[in-house]
Image (spheres, rainbow over the protein chains, first blue to last red):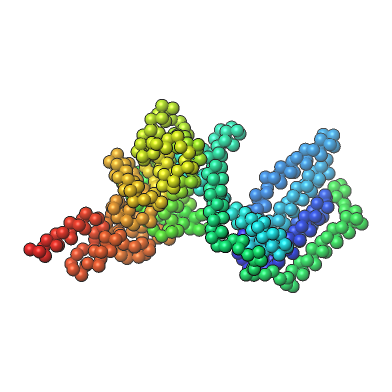
Length: 255
Length: 274
């Protein structure tokens, strides 16, 4: 999920509008529980991914969600299997697949958002949406430190492995306990880092004035209005289909 | 013995950190690996205990290829002290911190106690035995980290930036300590930027640049080789700087040792007086 600075039409969009778009996709994905509209939502993200040229990172984040997706598929399948009276029917499979696809759509759209929005812009967007600066700063700092912490976790793991720690050894409980020598240094160093950051910020006049100015401001451009239009269209179409068009399931169409 | 043959390594992000590196470190040798930030020094030494596996080429420790064994097994022979002690300290007391690795390697309780006492004594940490490592100063934490590795008495010791955050007295102790290890035929590899420390120790120096070894030889020759040093943006040690300024008076600039310098200067002074 690490943001990399690239210039693309998607990266240049206003983060507020992008966020509204992602929320609209989120709502639409929750509204529908069948496979056809969810597939449509799934495919709709493709142009964004390609325009932003983040295919590789995007695929990686989807791969990260694979485990959960499989888990969702099987739990849904098992429960609908039990509900149906212990018989496997095509609609069971379709339902489980739809639920999984819903999850994938959510992951997909949020990952496009985070992959194409810099933490700085995100903070700016929060600030301009009248979120108190303390909160928006805390949020962007947290987002920014995720890759730093991930790197540090890797170094700590290396340091402990060099002292003979075998993370993969032992039964389930032992394996959890194996992570204590990694977690404690990670937490301690995060706390130390945050104290240092606080001191560094205070020595650079953090909170000296009530009214903070910004180097860059957010303004809406043509592209933002286009995206806003698309967002509205998605919501309108979604509600229209939900209320007036009976969506057929694949099972009904082909069996 | 560490044998590196034609090793290249590329990080998953695509950064090529090592390019066709070959290096042999014999038993009992003391090697300092130097070079700019990002030259690949740490990446290279992380191959010695298997934390990183080469993308191309082989690394063998005492004849065993690092790809064919586990980090835990290699660590028994190769002790690795990381640059930042805070990346490994986690126990409630210094004693437990040192015991951690010993327990991982399956030492007997008696041996563990004996080794802890030995390691604490070695690094003058005995009074902190029951103290929390987090309460100690930066330099002391660094020594605890070192003690926690030395405790299992590895044959090969790798230290990443051991002199950072240490005052002069501690550096001198570290130097004495390395000499002591040498007397026991242990192999010592350090990664460092500290030119003066290297000049005082005069080990074999391996200079790296952009993932390649650009110079390899005795400290005295490498640290006075202006072209090689300029390539790796390393400055001459102070003694060598003085002697470089004095070459017009007929002095050799190939001097890094303070006592040798004193000898040469006294001799020259004596010559003039007579």
